[in-house]
Length: 228
Picture 1 (tube, rainbow, N blue to C red):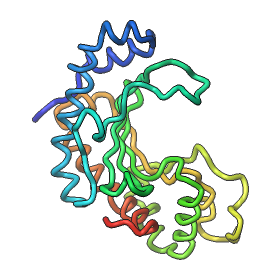
Picture 2: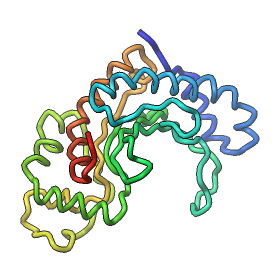
Picture 3: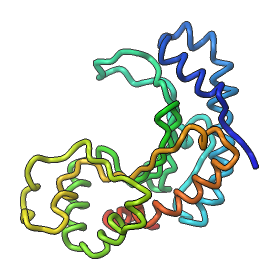
């Protein structure tokens, strides 16, 4: 069995959180490459066959630029927080059409004490939100199976951080899943213990999670007329 991340991975990210400046990052860039970027790339390479078994339309791309991994640099142009780096590493396992249209994705997050795997649409545009809400309203039975099956909800949580106060316009308040229609994010996720993230069974655990999240992503793809 293969391990990917180590205590040194978390040590670098904790150090970056404490010393979030260009000088510190450049002085420790070798640690970033060795303990965060390269093992994450290996993990993405090893996850691609598992992802292909779930959907041939999704990619775990290890390319350092234009692939699945997000840049460690933050975009501070419109942010109040001007710190230049993220204190975590994330990667998006994306739909092949994700660069042309808004599409759900799988997501993996590396951060000591806050590792998780998720899937769905984070902050979708208003038009996409309307399509999702209408599709759930028109297809409540399959939404119940995809997002509220007991086995699914025992394993994954739905993001409840951002919701409308009132039902969205045009939908009856008594609709069975009106609380879901209030969502601004359509995301399911599961926390990953640090010991699992650093352990030899990480790939197998993530492969199982990807398969578990697949019906949820499949439903969102159907709502947006995307292949799955």
